[in-house]
Length: 412
Image (cartoon, rainbow, N blue to C red; front, top):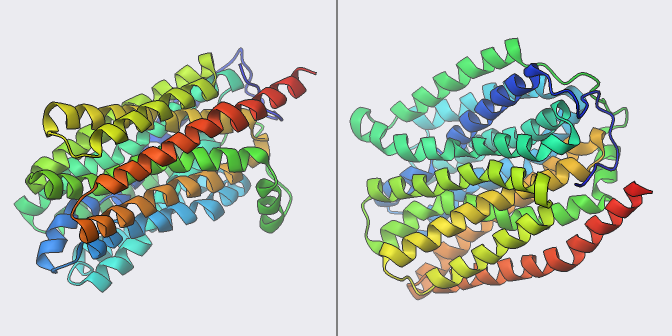
């Protein structure tokens, strides 16, 4: 089993306090609710395309803007979490996300410009990820962090809540309704988190300035290794979660509601596999889990590239990729939690999380552009297969050697 390079926590392998599991549950809930808000525009993309007469690229841009802002925002939010702790940052991020949610529901859905402004601010919700990983990691000993981070990662299922409810609420009660419901839930969570969340005992608070800590984080090998892999694993998950409704509607002629429900199935399977990826990483090591996951993504993307019949080949290909991307995401942050210095987990998480989000930002734009130019998604899926192949090669060579060197150094 891998060990962290530096460990300052008072939480030991013999003692995982009951409060740790409560903190994990609260953090996972907060992650899910903020991701629910973060993903509100995606299920409505086809509707806005029709009502505002958007091009394929404009529709892709609409659903991708919250992704890129939420991703880049993870860098400062992760560093701030190292400094102030999750007890402060979780309520703060949740409360701040309410503002764009209300704006979009009440006034910001009448034009593409208004939607892009709202989507830009909605990216705040995506930064919750960089709060939860260091917060959760500090509560658990090294040999349990893979499972803990995997469970926390299941909060990305908040996108499934959005997929399953947003269109139905709009159809039944009007455009504002899903946004008002989400804002109310976030407000309740912000209050509960402020009252109940506690940072782990012995949490190391960095004394250096933000700039110094970010520079030090950039010098860590794990930052760049995990960033590259997370851009593929979590980036692939995010890309499919925001673009799959459009892909299924355009490529297979499904209704908006049917496409959203199928996207929710993709998300739920990926979410279920995220803790499994962490659990397997605790036992087999994250390198093996990542290698297996990337091999499945490679095969699934190639199988789906010619747009086969949705049943059974297309469904099997997408579900296999969902499971692999979920497990791979859990494995990446098991790697981060094991190998990052304890007082830099937040900063590393922010950088890696940003890479993952950016990995999810580009594919929808590429897919929309390619479909607009060629009338086919084949090239986009072949590109995904090529990226997965490159990541698989890196996992089997550079990452494997880096982990072996770190493990050898620790044993001495």
